[in-house]
Length: 501
Image 1 (cartoon, rainbow, N blue to C red):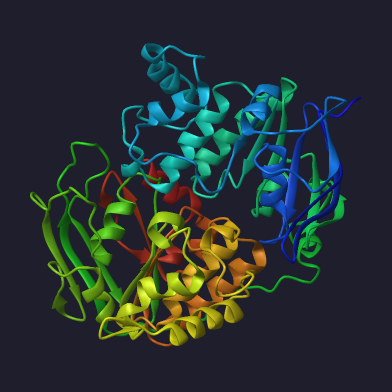
Image 2: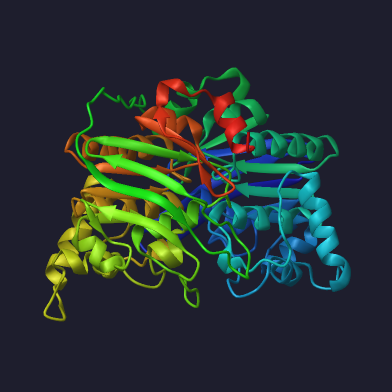
C-alpha cells in the first residue's frame, strides 16, 4: 500500500550542525510509528519539517503518493497533519477555548466550541476547563490543551512529541486506548518518546535516529527496553543506583500551608505539612493541576503577577528561619534553589544565551557584583554545565530556544546544581529527556543528596520517583498525603491516592 507519509533523503543544516542527514522513512496508514533518539539526534527538526514549520535543504516528502513542498503549518494542517510539540505553542493571556479557536479558524462556532472541547476532552480522558487562562495552567494541563487542540480536527497523521511526559499512568492508559482506536480507523501516528516501555507497548515499528541519521529500524514488541536503548545510544545504558542513607537535620519545613483561591481558577493548597531533611530525596506525585505548581512557588518564593497573598496561611521555614515574607533572591542566598516545570518563560528566557541565562539565577551566587555582571564567570559557569551534563549546544552563546527540549532541561537542572544548593526543588526533572540524559540527571541529584543537600522532586513519572526517592507523598485536590518510605508505596496505592482516595 502507498504510505501515508514518505521521506526520502531529507537533510537540514544549521550552521555547522547537521540536524538531519539524509533521513528516509515511511509511515503507513493505520500505523503507530515510533521515532526514537537521544536529545539532539534530530527528531525535533524532522518534526518541524513534517509540520511545515521548517523547509529542508534537500530531499523529498510525499503525502499519500504525491510529492509535496510544505510551505507553512497551515498547508500541513490542510493536508491532515496534526502536531503536538514538547514545547507548547500557547498564548498565556488567552483562555483554553481562545487558544484552540485560533488553530481551528471557522470550523466551530464560538458558542459551540466550549461544549465541543468538554466533549472531546472527556472522551479522551484529558480533563479541561475551556474558560481557564493558559497562564494559570500547569505543564500537564497545558499539554492537555495541545492534545485536544490537535485531536479536534481529526487529523489523518498525528505527530506527538513526548505526549505522555507529564501524564499520570491512568491518563497514559486512556490516551493509548484513544491512539489505538485512531489507528484502527486508518489514522497514522508518529510517536516521539523516550519512555521505551511505552514504545514497546504501543508502537508497530520504530525508526532510530542518532547524530541526525537513521541508525536502524525495529519492531518494538520484539525488542527489550535495553536493546532499544542500545540502538539509541550506541552503547549499553548505565543503571542509577540509590544507596541507603540516614537523613540528617531538617532543612525545610512547611506547616499548615494553605493558599487563597484565585478568581481565575486553579488549585488551592489545603493545610500542607512537609518536612525535608539533609541527605534525602522526597518525591511528590499527583495529577497535574492538583496544587504542584502552587506548592513549588510557595517554597521557591515566586508569586504570580496580580495575585495577592490574602487568605493564605501557614509557615515555610528554611534552616529554622521563617522565610514566608522573603522573595526568590533572598531564599537563593540562603541556599534554596528551584527548577520550574515550565522551561521557557520561567526556567529560561528563550532569546537569551546560555551564559545570560546563567546570570538570571546566579546573581545571588556572585555572578553580579555591585550591580555589574561578571561575564567571564558567567561564561565559565555555563561552560561547566555544558561539560558536566553533556548538553548539546553550539556553545555558551547559543540561545536557549535553539536547544532541544531535553538539552535545555539538562542545562536548567545543571545550572541550579552548579551553585551547590542546600535545598533543591525540581519539577519534572527528566521531562522529555532521553534515557542516557535521565541517568545523568538522576545521578547528579543523588550526588547532591550524598553531599548532604535536601531534594524535593515533583514528578508524574512514577518509575522516576521509585528510582531516586527516599520518601513519597501524593498531592490530590491541594492536600498532601503523609510522606512514607518509598518501599511502602506501590503503583496501585499511588494511583488510588491520585484519584482522591
